[in-house]
Image (cartoon, each protein chain N blue to C red):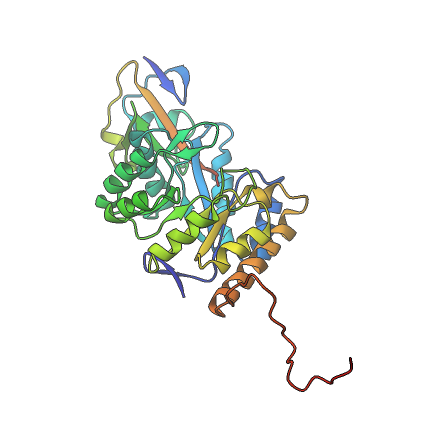
Length: 65
Length: 257
């Protein structure tokens, strides 16, 4: 199914948000996630099923002022 | 003793982590200045580069308090969601709350700021709001649950210093028991010293250090200035006068005319 990951279109067979993170190289990464603008806590990723057209944000620590 | 939400800090220097020439220079700036707090952010991560993971390791090794921000957020929803994501990633209740309302000056949207501060405070966050020197907004932020206020000195990244001395002095006088931090706009250590002499509790800066020719030396200069300003405030400065008053005693002066 077609998804948007960090602003880029992707095709993925991942059923859940947790599956998607593994497939896209974030398995053990220190990241926070949001789907369609709503925060999804790490503990809820396995239970969060994705649907076509979902917009996923994967954020990590970055420099800031 | 400087305290934010019950957490004691060694000094009043809060330093940003952006725009340094290299990670090593960033680390050296923190080492030489002894800054007590590092501000950080959240941005999109690439599954290939994983740049954020290296940065996180660097920050952890600094051994300072971490203050994540909501920089770049223009709405309450964006800021609240970003705060939740930051709390999980950085494992802290602290959040530097920015809700930007105007692009040219990066002036805070104080209406959205108060609303977001209330939502986050009720959710257990310890909010550090980036605000203006407006006393009414400050009062609303305190009622929303904030225990620290961070008025701007000048627009972010401008280096202009303390643009509204009168307003900032009034804020300090109006809220004598609230920790106040000058956040943004400082360009020189003398401006930080002036803020501390006025009785502010800390300063938060980034660009003035990161964009200096020698960031580590500038960070140390700011730390020294903050210490000087803090000492001066505690020493109860004299009142200025319009006319001269001789400092050398007149009594006993020889008559030689």
